[in-house]
Length: 317
Image (cartoon, rainbow, N blue to C red; front, top):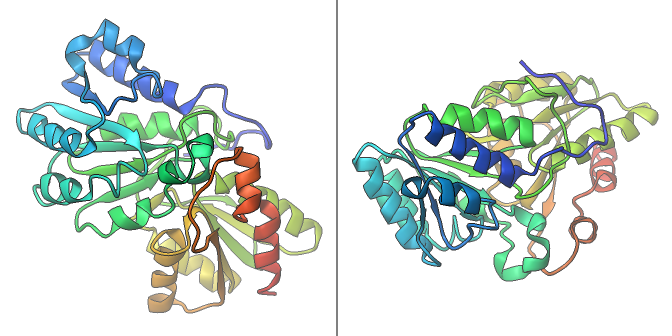
């Protein structure tokens, strides 16, 4: 069950602190969780957890491929490994290990990939990944998520500790736009309808959910009835929800902080072409690499804004 937070607010807690708090609580409760880092302890607020629980936190250094292999080995001993690194390194840097050690072996390992897309900001193009979810969703058994805010992240983490298998979770690292009220709960594999509408459906994930909601408000003032869906599970995508809203509104716009290739836009298009072909537009990154800049600048630069969504939606009317 979900409840929406007031519009326009930021989370009161950073996503990295949600993660660190989750690990600390699990260890204190006697969980066999073990957190692995690739020299990003302070970046993910894990220094304090490591000092308090040194047997449950391993800093493997800047060697992401080895981190994945280590996690796979620990999983064989009955531990519950959670690996964190930046999205670029959690996907393209260690892809063969994701394939061989996690997905092929059906390992019980959770990968937390932070600094998603343009939220990498000042780390620049080498650390700014727009292709990561597309890489990982191609693996046979992977489950690929992009959490929306701190309330969702906390709930998803508490679910993942009890789920077996390879889950890959994309997130920003600091404060996210607040979408959900405390107490909201989430079902993996099911999208959340945040707003009903009859003329067009905006399907978004991550930081683009807030942009889609703002775009819907602007479109409503223009007389366009706009539905908004938070598709936080990229794989398996909620096929029935996509089909139902394609039938209901006849127009779809996808909104993602990711390349338009192999991410949310592609996943939704695959459903539409097989179940209910309707006109659609994809708002996302197009054939470009990242660069240094503030998040606001980068969202404008790459067209990841409410204004871009409004333009895309109007082109379908």
